[in-house]
Structure formats: C-alpha cells, structure tokens
Length: 385
Image (cartoon, rainbow, N blue to C red; front, side, top):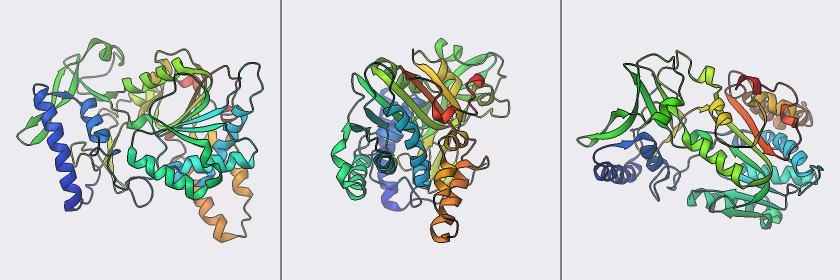
C-alpha cells in the first residue's frame, strides 16, 4: 500500500471542500451515481477548483510531480532533433510548418524546444499550445517571455485543436491525465465502477458496464479483476486524425502494451494519485489538490478508430538514445563537474530502466511522413502492440 501523503494546509482544504460540494451536487442531480471518468474530470478540470484549473504549484521539485522536460533540458534538446527532421521533411506536397504541444505544463518543453530548434536553424512557423488550464497558460506565457523573449511572437495559445493543420503534435504525459472509466469483473460479467455518496463521503458503486466497454477488454480476465479503459485517449487521436493534413503525433507517457497492461498481478488496475511527490491510490482524498492518473494501454491506442500510420513505438530511453541524448551530454566536458554532474544524473533518471527509461514509452503516428523516424531507427517495438 503506498504511503499516505502529508495533509494540506487549511486554505487548500477549504478549496477542496468547495469542489467536494460541487461534485456531491452533481452526484445527487444524476440520481446518486456518476461514472468515475466524470468524477475524475471534475477533480482535475472543474473551472477554478479542479487540480489543473486552480492556481496551486503542481509541476517541478516544489510541486506534486516532476516531468521529463523539467528534469533536464537534455530531454527537449534530444526531441528537437526528431522535430527538426520532420520540419525539414522534403517529401513532395505541403510541408510541415508548425508545432502543436498538447498540455505544455509550465512551458519548459516549449522553451527548450524553441531554443534548440533555433540552434539547429529549424524554427517552426508557429509554436501552438493547446492548454485547458488558465493558470498554467499564464505560467507558460511568463516563462516564454523570460527565457526566449525574441521567439515569443511565434507562440500562440489555442482553445481547441485547429480544424486543419500540418504540424508536429507533441504530448508529454497528456494521455495519463485523461479521465478513465474503471471496471470490475464479477461472476463473469463486467461492471462499471462509479462514485456515489455515503453520507458526506464518496463511495464506489457498480453498475453493469456498457457492451462497448466490455468488448474492449480481454475475455479471459478472472473475476475480481479491476482495470481502466480510456475512451478519451482514442477520441483525442481520432480528432487528430480528422484534422491533421500532414505531420506526426509524438506522445510520451507511462504504460504498457495490452499483454502487460492486463497482467494477472495488475488486478487492481493502474490508478494512482500524486501529492507533494508522494504516490498513493485514493482518488477520493482531497479532490482538486492531487493529481489523478492511470497508465496508458498503448495497444488500445494503436487500435483505436483512426487512419493515421503507426510510425513507431519504443521506450523513452531508446527514443532519446536514438535522438542523440548521449552525444548532447558529451558536449559538456566531464571535467566541468559543476555542469556535467547534474546533467549526467538527470540523464541517468531519463534513461535508467529503474527510473523513467523503460516505464515511459513513446508512440508516434503520422500522415504523409516517411518512416522510420530517427527516434525509432533502433529498438522499435511496434510488433508488441
């Protein structure tokens, strides 16, 4: 059982109490039950109160979790080599001109990519950020003005995906934050786990799962098996399929192919919460103050209803190595310990199988793009999906 996190202060708890009341009102209005995906959506995205909508510090060493772009600029600089290849693509037809980042966090990856692409003399016409959080959007704008003021005019923010685009679309830890449905198998049938009220507390409550949800799961899973299904991830890819005229979609996240995702020992699913760098498994604790995530089933993503080409699937470590992260590290003399030591330590976390290297995966889709991409030139594991 994961460790219990340290309780928030009274001001934060008061904000969480407001969100609790909002969610309780929705449960009552819905007849006493809402799907977990709806609960997760409200806990993360309710205007002004949800985790990603309120103003608390979330990302980085002083927040609740740290992402690969925050860990080291080597991540963004290595990715920039792949992005530059795509922006320089010389195949006949309309060129790939823009970058679209889905959920840009504090803006660190945007700053690193723009700086690295400038060095590579391969800046995009526009760097477009799709960000649902007004708070994070303000943080992104401030960081870009501070770090790359001369490139700020190239950056614009989107309320929704453009109707048509030729772009490199990037998403780092986006899929894991999309609301998921939770299911449990009992007496040979699948039940959808939702949220009801027990007095003033949330409680799990089950209803028969829709046939489409049950059909998406392996038929041989045993009773008392709990797991998650993420229709929103497939829907996002479907929207990108509809709008992307030419380009690539590169997604980084933690997860597994189906045969690992539905491992017998993973019989309580992958749902996890993060608060002040402590992971635990209670999504009902302090709604609005903690992140709620679930691992990605990359096989389901690859099989979702879209016509994009699968361009590659591999571990984060292999992708970054293919993109030259070790060469970038070697550019800093080892004798310069003050610079080299922290970069080397961060690279170890990005690449180590015991850290982010193997748990995090990279999957790419595209239209009108020649394969193989640089990031999948070695170690492509698309056959596992």
